[in-house]
Amino acid sequence: MFTKHVIKKLSAYCNGELPAQEARGVREHLLACERCRNQHGEIKLGMQLAQQLPPATAPAGMWSEIEALLDERSPRPDFQPKAPRLAFGFSWFRVAAATAVLLVAVTIGLMWFNYAPGVKWPVESSGSVRIDGNHISDKGSIAAGETLETDNSSRARITIGVIGEVELDPNSRIRLVQTRLTEHRLALDRGRMSAKITAPPRFFFVDTPSAVAIDLGCAYTFEVDDAGRSFLHVTSGWVELVGNGRESYVPIGAMCEARLGFGPGTPYFDDASEDFVRALEKFDFEGGSHSEFSTVLKESRERDTFTLWHLLSRVEGDRRVQVLNRMIELVGLPNGVTREGTLQLDPKTLEAWKDEMDTVWF
Figure (cartoon, rainbow, N blue to C red):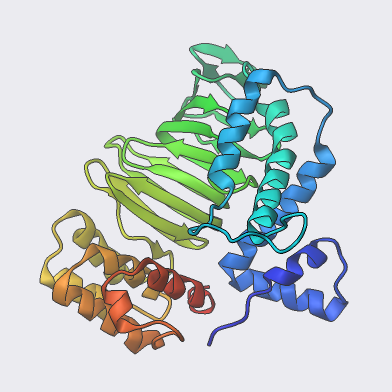
């Protein structure tokens, strides 16, 4: 059922160094494996950034942000390392730190060039578009703190540096909250947007009244209605949707709704049955009777173990046991995963479920 990851081959694959048959196998694996696809995206992005780095001199005050980013991305050992045997003190931690430094170094030039204080993002418009109340024709720009609005017949496209773009549908309003070295954030107040992002994970954020979408390297549509409800549909990669103490991981082909006071509901694939989706919505936002819970379990398919995986942490007691039993009935218990660890919501066990289920979910 499960397949081996191809992470060790990705560097050679991106550089065109693999034999044709082996490269074809990697391509086929990437279509099904989210974990390897994320790694491939980061390697490919790093190569693109290295090619596009412009010559620039960063101000001294920028280094505090760089140090903070390095601290955040550099792993730290859970133990006190022993005295190194090699004369130069080379260790796994130094390798990890060097890798983090390289990532930061590659990112610095791009981020400084595109996200320095005062930088504006280009806007292309079709129809009547306003930025902070001022009409623009064809082209304009938006800066941090400004608001862009479309009317019932206009559209707009915002270019996010070199990491992607956002398209805004009619009757929509979006704000550029901030653009910094470590965080680039929009706020969708109403309407519908489409985003295509190729940045490293957790660099691009979209706020809504009911949840925050955190980009994990993806493409998606995001809609906010007049009641402040959010509707996310992912068309490539993954998005993390968070709010009100809840979080949902939404992959390609999946959807998730969020409501004020609730945060994100339980994500589901867009080809799930109507009865499954209706029962899940009532369970998430209307109290969820025994009848709705039973319908979710009954209507779930192999692929819907993705939804059940999220439900594990949202139910307790006998309901959690029922969810796990249904998952095992549908797909079996993955190698190395235990019932006890799953029912106790052990983080490593839950992550193992997610990693091993790629071939079922996709």
